[in-house]
Image (cartoon, rainbow, N blue to C red):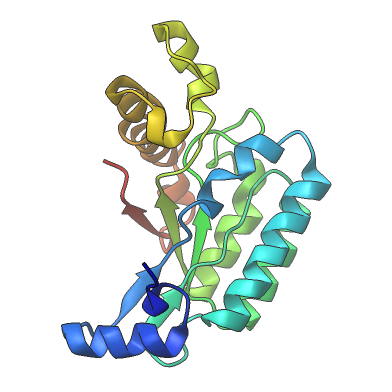
Amino acid sequence: KDYPAFIDRSARLALMDDQGVEAGVMLPTLGVAVEHDMADDVELTYASLRAFNRWLEDDWGYGADGRIFAVPMLSLLDLDRALAELGRELCAGARLVHLRPGPVGGRSPAHPDLDPFWAAVSEAGAGVVFHVSNSGYNDFYGTHWSEDPANPSHRQSPLQWALCNTERPIIDTLTALTLHNLFGRHPGVKILSIENG
């Protein structure tokens, strides 16, 4: 069935009015699942995220109207590219940015080498959203529990969802951010966890 409010901004706003919803955060359904599969190709990762973000900005905007706050996707695979895309998104009005839960390129997202990113986020007053994603945990951990890492999300077992997609990645990430002292170094950083179990 056709649902215009899923693809058209004015239809979405009309539906929000009908439902009495003042404002909402808008995250991509499948977009949050692509970074892991491209992580070996940094150029492709950033080209894909940048293209998505430009579409998101054009079609939905970043909340200038105070109603629909679309969230651009970023990656910490390459600090310089992350800072460039963050700067572009902030200049376009983004108030939230998305990072996938889990380690990035074999290191903690709270690694001190990434402090320039966190300092820029904090200075801008932007929030960082961690939404359920493909964090690579099906490859890291699912195989150790007899699970098929190639299962598409709609065919994954409850164990895969708990260990690989929802609870485990966000718990690991929030633990790393805390115990690697991100908030001690950058007390203004704001984190949102959305749909992580």
